[in-house]
Image (cartoon, rainbow, N blue to C red; front, top):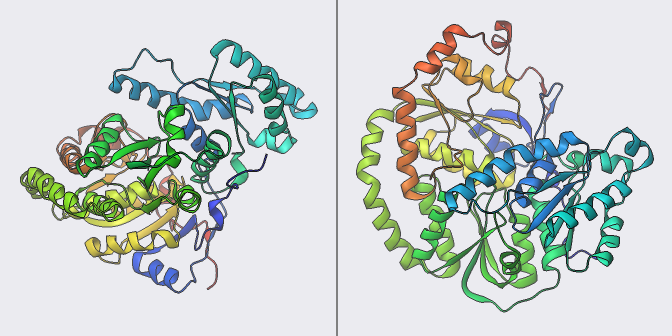
Length: 486
């Protein structure tokens, strides 16, 4: 079939790097002068998989079945966390009667790898339809099925003839396709356009805004964003998490498009602008008062709702200002290191600036031209000396740096850092509110709690072995990075 939007990979975007290190001002100057080049790691612990994010983006769509054409391992990796998040979301929404996400593996083995697995895929699809009667069936590729050359598009074509009432969606998301895992989100959104929406061109719905959001958002955060947008006169169509077929078909009917994170949906929103004339804006996550101000003002400017936004911002700020001042009495002057996904990392570091904490280093999966303005805003809070470690899942570098910096608090997933005895917490919470002005208070209390109750981490430090040999902490954290010559 002729695709409305072609698959793209993010590795080719301007200034892209997933292996670099340097101070904020140093890297900013290199990007501005177009001389920041991707480095090379001679040793890596692993990187995130493109397929996993395609699974995360699509797995919660209602009345659907997902078939991952792969050995067992791929489907297990992609499904464990996804299904847990969907079940938590259902619980908070009060919709526990709905079945869990349906992820099915074709379980490719030696026989299929040698002789081909197309028949296995076809048989699996028929059995899935007989059991679940889905409205949409997602068929995802994997490294194994792509390497052996299984033609999943032709299999899907045959199934369409046999089951005309089922929408078959093919996603070519093999893990080696891109080193930037956000490509998996793009491929998922492109697939919804190509196979579900296709050439549909519905009438515009006044005040409707598509909000493209990652799978990591809690139900509380989705409700908070809807509340904020409703307050300025807009209705949010949140995509694609927990969406229905009807929600997907409303995408081209929206007047505006917004992404909840810089890495999510910008390629697709550019397509929607070109195809349907829907204006869009790319902003950071609304975590912290300053980031939420910026998020709302960008949307308000897009929709001509500036007056409503300013009134809402003033009211919400007044509600939380007193408690934020109390939190700052405990956090002001503390040194902090942050590890998070790119968009959430910017928001977390901005929030630390609001709490008058000093950023020592930030670990982010990627760096490219699109993120320079965000890093410049961080310099307004923290100066230009903080270290940027561009690393997608390289904890051996992270923990080396954390031990050397010895911050007062660490923000991020702290499985290994906890053993250093440092107070730790995170802002990735799938159960509670972190967005908007109310989220500022929740996150501030979490930081206070981490500072006041650090006994567990202190005992870990005293009674468990460090995750790496002592000799590694004396090495340069970037020993295994070969930096290019400028």
